[in-house]
Structures are given as C-alpha cells and as structure tokens.
Length: 263
Ligand SMILES: [Fe+2]
Ligand SMILES: [Fe+2]
Image 1 (cartoon, rainbow, N blue to C red):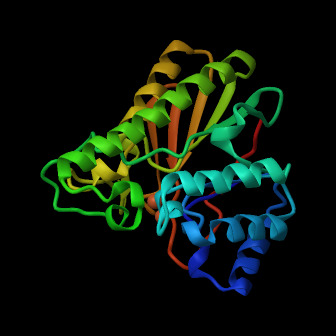
Image 2 (cartoon, rainbow, N blue to C red):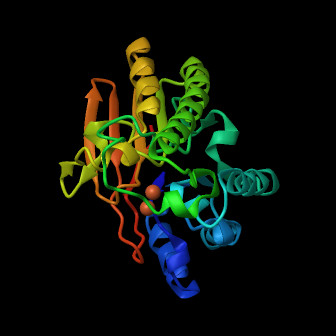
Image 3 (cartoon, rainbow, N blue to C red):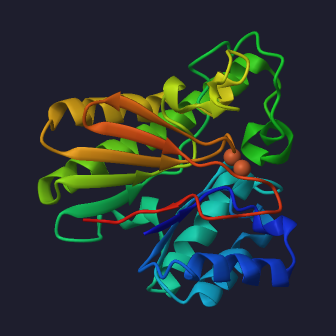
C-alpha cells in the first residue's frame, strides 16, 4: 500500500503530476492511499480522476481542508461520492465502510477536522485560510467558528466510531486514513509537537478519543493511523496497539510518505 499525503496537485503542471505518478508506480504498489489535501474544490474532480488514470491501480482517499477551498464542504464531498460511485477502483473512504486489503487487514477512513479542542482555540492569533476560503467557516466570531469546527470534528468521530466497530468484527489489523492528526503527540511541526496556537486547528481530538477507546476495547487488534495536514512527519505511539504516522509534505513536490507491507 503506497501512502502519500498533502499532494496539493493544483500547484503542479500536468507533466509534474505524471512524474509524481511514476514515482508512486516505481514501488509497484497494489493500491494507493492519499490522506487528503489533494487539490482545491474547483479542481478536485479533475485531479482525482486524472491521478487515478495516471496510476491505473486502486486509489483510496480522504479529503483535507484544502479540498474544500473556494467551495463548501458538501460540494467537495459530493464530488468524492460521485467519483466513488462511477469509478470502481476509486474510493472516498468515508463512504465505503470497511475496505478489506487482506484477510487480516482492513482500511477505513474519515476526513477529520481541526476541531478546536486542544491548545488555545479562544486565544490563538493563528487564523487559517480555511476561515476565509471555505464557505461553511465564514463565521462572524471566534466562538461561532470554534463551535462549527467542533461540530465537524464530532461528526467525523461518530462516523469513525461505527466503521471501526465493524472493521474490528472482521479484521485484526486496522489501518485508519485521516487528514488531521488525532492526537497532540501526532501533531508534528519540525520534529516537535505543535504549540497551543496551532494545536486547535491541527488536531482532531474527537477522532482521537474514538481511536483510543477502540484500541482499549480491542487489545488484541492493532491500529495504524495514517495522517498529514501539518506537512511535518513523525510517529507517535499512543498506546501499545495504536500508532499514528504523520506524513511530511512539501508544496509543489509531492512524494511517497511510505510503502506499507500489508500482512
Ligand atoms: Fe496540506
Ligand atoms: Fe491540510
């Protein structure tokens, strides 16, 4: 399973996207997963379909915050649903439920959202472009913005909770793809954990709670989370059977975060 994150294809030429696809194919993966920030709303459909055509192998993905830029959340999610319905080998994970990779291992996913819970959401001077480029987040006050992103995080957590239970009933090893790091410890920035100014928008604490509860409820299962969003890589062992891998990324130079040998 080849894993890439934050590929931001809207910053690349067609030739550069082709070169990226060739780098991915060089590892001869059976399937590819992309953990969000694929493009922006107006170009999302073109880039997902184009990437799939260049790869010619099963492509799984979740959406990141940039995938909603210059649009709204439902619009981009509808694009993802339509592509999933029309192209059998392209799968937006939140709509797909449990995706078996092998007899032992299943892939599931939710987009995730920087849900304004960790760090200092009320006082941070950090304002993401999200708050002026995503229709749903054009909130008049910080308090309203925080309540909106918390509701978004809660919806992601509810969706993950259901699919994780189903995955645990049929598989021992679960790979969870999501865009936003679900724990403080996984919110890397230049080799360190992000500070309280960035944590509110760079962690999805609600999804983290669901993951921790699932890991504790299923001690004989193992859970690997793949995420991105911070563009800074690292590995965080949350509990014995739950590890979070955050993929690094550079704008304009997408790469392979890792190739995972799925048992
Ligand atoms: Fe990104
Ligand atoms: Fe992001």
